Image 1: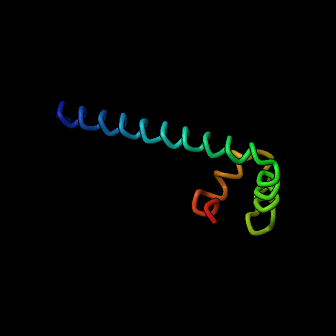
Image 2: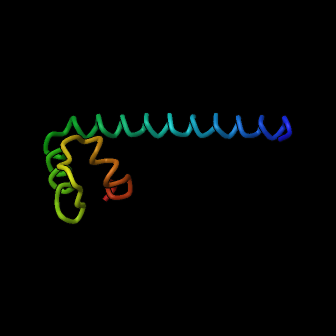
Amino acid sequence: MKSSESIFYLEDVEADDEALRRLRNLNDKITNMIEFDISLSYKILKMVNTFAYYTRVKVTSIQQAIVILGLNELKK
């Protein structure tokens, strides 16, 4: 492997780490906004625990619900 290839790979890893950090920050912000609204929190948890979004275990946190539903579904 050439040294330039390994440097390119390290840059990709750093970019991926930055993208993951941004996604985690976005997830945290969305979670905080939803948790602030008790009614919305209840509706989202109720929705994600229906058979349409069947999971083996009951979803009890907004953060879990966001991951299962995805951002597109939350926008609806």
